Length: 225
Image 1: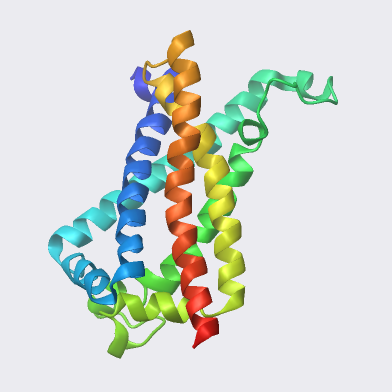
Image 2 (image 1 turned 90 degrees about the horizontal axis):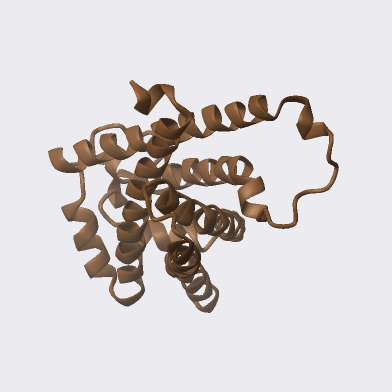
């Protein structure tokens, strides 16, 4: 099937899974921002998204999307290197028109994946996993108190630094990935190319600003307490 066997098909899979993950990030960022205004509101959202059957199914679906996206990222990177062959050693300078994020998407993706694993350990494992009966990391008393885990995690400078690095890598990854995905699915005309680059930067900035605002605000609150 061309969707799996051709280069274009693999790019389509990367693009569609990437767009789905971006939509999830948009929701997750909006949910986190609620914690800035009301711990009760954030915990109510956490309770709604707790260990219910639909939350478990959604989590499995997101995990599948992420795995497919990561696998195809490695496949396409290996494919591109193989296609260039020995030519990739012929030029020592990077093409001036190729963006830094484009040249380093795989490395950025690895950083994003590492940050995701830290995030899962800090929140998902201590909340949803505990609700499912697996107390792998944590504190059953606070398994339904998402606001507590935000305050606890971001009161620790090491996690603040790690999350800032993660979000910065995510920003670069999204700014290139968003418009690249849009181009792959058909918005690739000269006019839309320029528009999508602007939209991707604005959208990635909005998402990452929401995430980093939560990190820095809760860290600031911990210093004032």
